[in-house]
Length: 473
Image (spheres, one colour):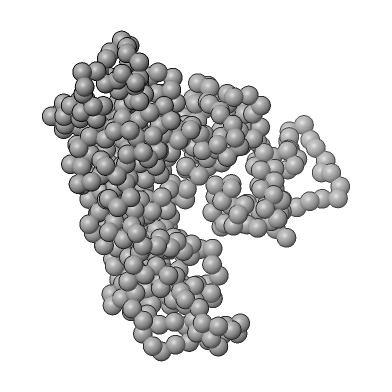
């Protein structure tokens, strides 16, 4: 191969040769992106303009590829980056192509290291190539490669259908109702809808209705004027006004009291509201995305949720399935989450085959949030680069039998209870769940909301378990 100062040969320019190669890929409906060893883009074919829009190829020259295709794939610990550095190819991975000033697109990408050899027509700047094509919905579950979509990772058919629906909503302002169990990633779905919408440059304002006291929720949503109630010493802008031009995400929708449901219905119908203590109507320009882990149809029968509001919210319904119903997502999720957790601890860790099998066996009642918490625990207790089953929480690894159920409610006794040969009791201090809950509460100064999030359960469930274990203060 000639010296770098003699390349390219025959008087051809480097860009001329790359453009010629790119034309071949464009004939197949593909876009070619070339990056150097620092993973910066040195060339992008005009096929990218056909996917993203005119000017996209030029806009990414010199940018780090992770800023375009995401840190989950091309960050320092990203799956595809590590594969390329190791000299491996990857084919058919789904990814979100995001370029500032252009609408995001879901694409299928294949990557490979460049083998220069003795070739005289291979640009020495190019270390790796990425071939992209517009993604087609894959409704076949268990596909070989996962899809990384705006922070979400999946390979199951059910989640790929949700990704496709979000793409179809790209030009819509319709109200969306996201349902699913706690910890399934409903807020991530909401954020993806926002990113893919015409409002992507506007704010995304999230409101957890279950975490705000009901007597303050109206003020949080709509704002208040000075003197509206005790403690209202100045005017305050509500979340609907803050979300103007963007999206407001109403999480835990099933916890909103009935009297506020009337005001929400008016916002959805007429786009108007009043601040607390004010008679002047204001206009809302926020798109509404709501989410709940409750059965709103049952709540309607129980007369705790308005039927007219339910149908106003449910213009586009999206149900996020629990993790136990999409086990093919466990492996890509675990690897992605482990890379994220490892980065926070400045460690590079991986899962052993036995540990991965333990993750597959577990039912994950806390869904993706519980999976991340389990991996956080494993990284904290592991002293090697490989996570083994014994590093996982006991309920996940199955390394020890499930604890004997303690009689509820628990009442501490100053004298030990007499034991008989026919009854074996276990001290509550040895109950792994009790220890996990108490440790989480102590670590967060007994703040239930933060402890519940770490434990992967709702505040209501945590309160019930605290009562059962005698931990209420």
